[in-house]
Amino acid sequence: MENTQKKPFACKLLIGLHGLLGVGAVFGGGALMLDPTGNLIGMPSDIMKVPLFPNYFIPGLILLFILGICPLLVMLALIKKWAWPWGEKLNIFRQTQHWAWAFSLYIGFALIIWIVVEVYIINGASFIHLFYTGLGLMIQMVTLLPSVSEYYRKDSHQAA
Image: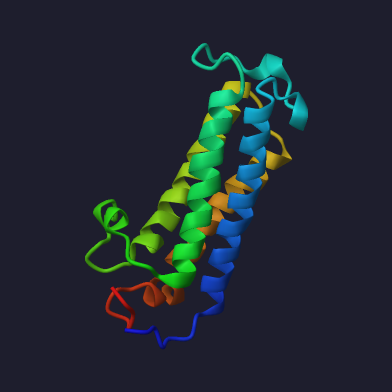
C-alpha cells in the first residue's frame, strides 16, 4: 500500500538532522581511521588516555559506523519507510511504530552517550561537545513530536 499521508515538516527536519549527523560522523570517523594519530583533524594524541585504545582508529571506526552510516540508513528509512525484518526485531516499539522511528531514538541516545564518554575521557568539554549533545537531544525531541510519531505509526495508512 502506498503512503498517502503528507510528510509533516517535523519529519523533514528529523531526516535533515540524521543527515547532518551522518555526514559529519562519516567524515570524522573516516579521518580518524585514515590517520589514527588524530593529526588530520587536529585531535591531540595525548588526550587518548584509554588503555583499550592506543590511538584513534577504533573510536574512528565506531564513529563511522554507529554515528555515521547508521544515521544515514535511518534517514533513508525515514524517507522511504521500507520494511526491514532485522530492524523490526530490534524495535522495542514494534507493535505501534515503524522501526526507523525507534532507531531514530536509539541514535539520539547513542550520540549523547558518545559525547558523555568522550568528555569523560578527555576530562574537558568544548563547543563541539555542546553542539553534538544538543543535536542528540534535538533528534530525540523531534522524533517524539506527535506529528512525527503519528506519521511513523504502523496503523497510519502506510506499508508495513
